[in-house]
Amino acid sequence: MTANLLDFDLEGLTAFCERLGEKRFRAVQLFRWIHQKGASSFDDMSDLAKSLREKLKNVAHVKALDVISQHISADGTIKWLFDVGGGNAVEAVFIPEEDRGTLCISSQAGCAVGCRFCSTGHQGFSRNLTTGEIVAQLWFAEHFLRKHLQRDERVISNVVMMGMGEPLQNYAELVPALRVMLDDHGYGMSRRRVTVSTSGVVPMIDRLAQDCPVALAVSLHAPNDALRDNLVPLNRKYPIAELMDACNRYLAHAPRDFVTFEYCMLDGVNDQPEHARELVELVRRHSRGGVWCKFNLIPFNPFPESGLHRSATEKIQIFAKVLSDAGIVTTIRKTRGDDIDAACGQLAGDVMDRTGVGERMARQRTIMLKPVAAPSKQVKET
Ligand code: SAH
Ligand code: SF4
Image 1 (cartoon, helix red, strand yellow):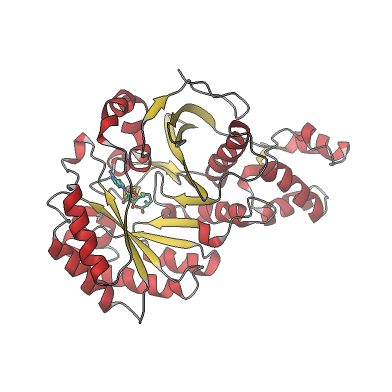
Image 2 (cartoon, protein in one colour):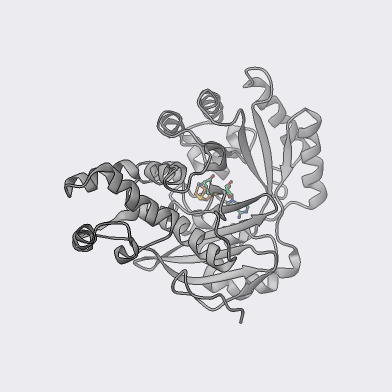
């Protein structure tokens, strides 16, 4: 079996090259060809000796993911559905903003945590993605976008692990993938611009602090254990007080001096002013002095099986005000306007029902595009 070179961080690739009798600088060259230039064919790697290229062809390949579909929005948001085999698909979303380009990527096919408000959770768990499959989403998106936008320099400046799956339940494959993102010979991203989002796998938060401290987002969704047990079943294993302590320990290693708490606004469930006041108390109780967290309120993206509804905008604003009046920096995530529900309905059987990621990340009108097979193909609107 030949090795997929997308599975390796630079250390892994160096070990692989050493087994072939090649020095470390060859691994660096190879790594740069793959990640910085987007090469997948050894023949394109012109400064590698021909003998090495021939050797590599026998033992290695760069295996991308097949793109099932691509949707592009008027504001440039792009969603891809990738085939990961066995009838499973995962989604990645590119969100361009004035000062940054963010890619939201998946860590698992499905998810075992089973949060009530999440369509991935309702779908159940299929399998962990490999490091190569996590990296392939970034590799594809970055090099596709450079061609699509005709840019020579890097397009994706930020990565958020907020697609399908619980990244900290796929720790062994996640960490090398993060290292590829951070490596100066890879994507050269700043630790502050790579965010792991977790529903609260406490022991793994501690390990991440040691192994690869990047920005941390924690999906809180409730101010007390009774409510959180119900919304995020993992809370029964790692209750809120333990989670808060883990966040505080993480901050000693983190590239940022705050943790972001994500809070999905569910009508009549967790969106009352009392809940916001309880959150203020919670944050104060666990504060070791000064600001240590920010809140990101996410208007719920409904799906039929959930039986839940999105909080009204005014309610979200009142909730945000309680937090910000208490000195907690609070943002409300922008969502798509309701005017595009029809367009999303059309995609329901294709993308949205299977993952829900695009639902929660996309903010503008989506236009269905023809499926594309490779990064080099031109994007055409249908
Ligand atoms: N498993 C990780 C990361 C993936 S989910 C986690 O839970 O943090 C990324 C974010 O999307 C989480 O904050 C999650 O709570 C939120 N989310 C999930 N389903 C949603 C929905 N239907 N509407 C709005 N946000 C949702
Ligand atoms: Fe899994 Fe995150 Fe969805 Fe919960 S919100 S089911 S942890 S992907």
